Length: 137
Image: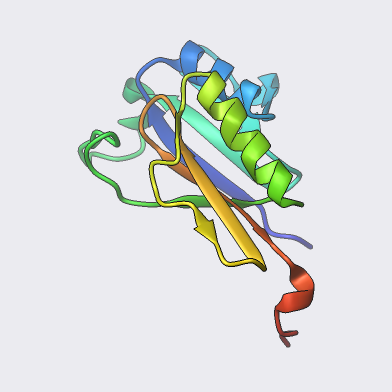
């Protein structure tokens, strides 16, 4: 069975963040969403939980950092083509995100760009030619 990942992100404006993630192809799961959180489905195995700051504080006493200033993680999604990489970054940019906050990576067999969501969380989008990678066990 495939493992699932639930990425929890603190957001300052839940409505704005939900609209942003819908614009970059995520689908809201209303069964796990309310006025304090939104479950955004990126794939069958990837879920992004957008949490208001008050909701976030129910899970940890750690300080919420300003992701526009500090970074703790870089999140990376795979894409099926170079064109899909740029399409997703362009959608993010058109929806209030910041395009390419990290350097564009173009190694021929691998191509990646990135975007920041409205709260400053960085998402990389990467395409890799699988025929150029060695098999693994």
